[in-house]
Length: 384
Image (cartoon, rainbow, N blue to C red; front, side):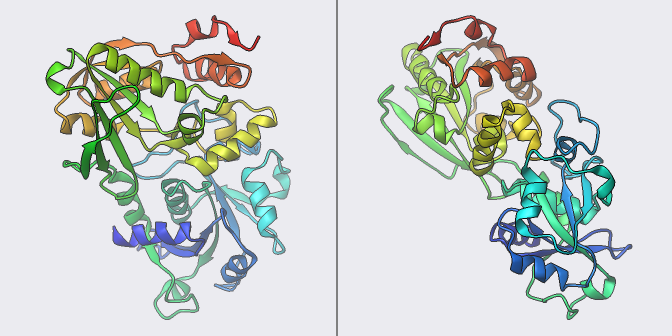
């Protein structure tokens, strides 16, 4: 998987990579992420074989552009393969600029379908979309197809460019288990609970790190163990953003643990429901233009919720915790843990405070994702 990891690293650096598909067919593309795309990179792609550039986008983005039917709510690409039959490839004009590609990949404008050369994304293009998603880049790539002679060593394509196969990318996407042993741990007294210990875990592919925060002395923990799965939210957790209730839920769960004699908070590196901080901020801009939180994510090419909870299951297993009281309003967290063999014996709701900024966000979680927040919505709105 080293080739796929190098490809991921290079995409994040703004460099083009070569992705090959089925060896029997000899199909391959030279591609680059739309995020960070430059005139120089476009020229490099154009010079790789003289063929027409193409833009590959996910099925969610294709629907937002008015090109395909709506995918089912909550549907994402298969993370074990990266493949989705609705991913689309679009022919680009010869004079296309980076700004035009960016607008086509992420804006609210809907191009005329008749003016587009549209087809299904190829296996190499889907591989590029998978790497972009794994790297928390905007899931859109520009590519040019290569002939077998172009794709061979010593061909016109620069031999210093990373080469990765679609199969290697699939294996990287599937290898997302947390290491069975922790990376490190240490005591971290907190304002809400002085008896606290942080345990750091790293995913098997080395990309993300998660933290288990153990509150209280383990021997004093109640049964079942109170547990909170909390996805990282820089804006809410650290800066107290009024757009969400994340910071309030984080600190509220710590207070619950302290009052009950202990518990465990799993702090998961899944900013913006798994799309990353940069894309979350882009989604905020789209929300300012009238979209709700789900439609904003889908307009950028993501599913309604890109998170997975395999890491949480692995962390609980390492901590030898298999029966819990889950502090959550999210039914998907309950389902995911139960599917992973964790006994969710009880659930406790955890509410923040409504305000005029987070009201649309909370409503969307109820109406679009089925979160158990009806009681919160019936409460007062701060400042009114």
